Image 1 (cartoon, rainbow, N blue to C red):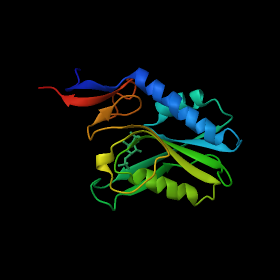
Image 2 (cartoon, rainbow, N blue to C red):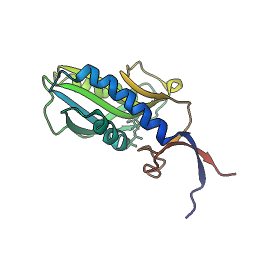
Image 3 (cartoon, rainbow, N blue to C red):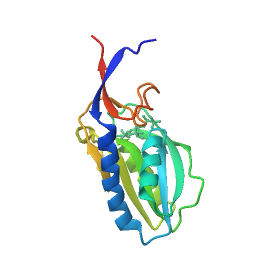
Image 4 (cartoon, protein in one colour):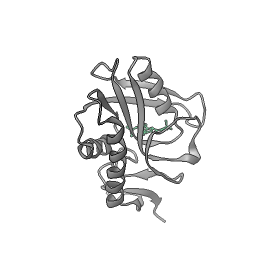
Length: 178
Ligand code: PRP
């Protein structure tokens, strides 16, 4: 079946790879002296990004995953986040780097930082591939950011539209067919 929309490339696979190299150089500088780093990917969207990030990073890290589900009206600041899959390992006393595919309103990342901090890690830092600054509803700091993007529906490189298009090697904007 033909999908009822086109996808216009926004960020090429080559640009993503180049930006990941830059981010990893920064992350390596910060964490090369520690053997405690746990890189936590947020499912599902971050699965492609984290796979490329940790291989480029080339540090002795551990990888863990969380899955969160947001629900309710995303325009409301009371938006709630639920944990669907918790961490497998303990993070007390560990340095943690949370990896998100996209920061939209910021509620998910803000909630996760609070949840992780309640487990008494040594530190919590954040990394996101893309951020829609125009959509921010809460103040949440991204320590390592790939790209600021416009307020468009984006797919590819882990990001989906109704669970489709996650496997595209680039990030594209969904454009309805005429
Ligand atoms: C996306 C994305 C973030 C969240 C960001 O997840 O992966 O986790 O939305 O939105 P926010 O900044 O407004 O909180 P989604 O619910 O689409 O699930 P998915 O990762 O499984 O695609």
